[in-house]
Image 1: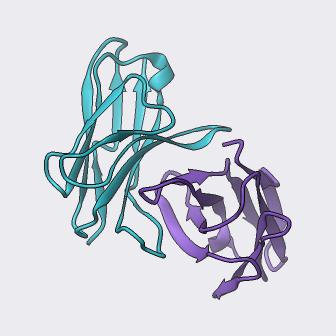
Image 2: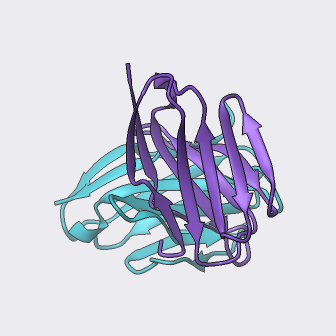
Length: 111
Length: 113
């Protein structure tokens, strides 16, 4: 979707390294979701951010919302092979809880 | 396990054939959605439903029809399949106002030859 741009498109990191994925919106960010997709499987909900400045963490994954930049970042600390997959951000748009998704960031973690 | 179940998981169709993809959820969610996922395009919304008996068009509805006769089921139909409909299809459900977003099915990989 042109409404949400993710960067980088793909990323290869060595196990133990930190990494950051960005999601930039052309619209005001309200209701920004992060999902992870393992290859060949469905999407798993990671976390949701609702307002500027909000930051949430789950295990080694931290997501932040910068309202001024219209951007959210997903940071993984000390990456592990289990972190490999496709990370997608989704923005709540319109009614009925519809989500518009970014094109995803493919993460590979090497040993 | 509770969640969203999609059938079938894989299917190959010939151009012009029809088929129905079934999505079933057991979480009593009001909202259900059908998305397609294509390389470089991300997930795009095909159709959605806000409750039993209701459906609405999403971003890319052409060539698809849907029905939600029962709250737990959301069917996606292809009347005359085209190669452009080769994709991975995902169904998702949500309860209105949830902070947990969608629960996704595991997807249906459809190839139209």
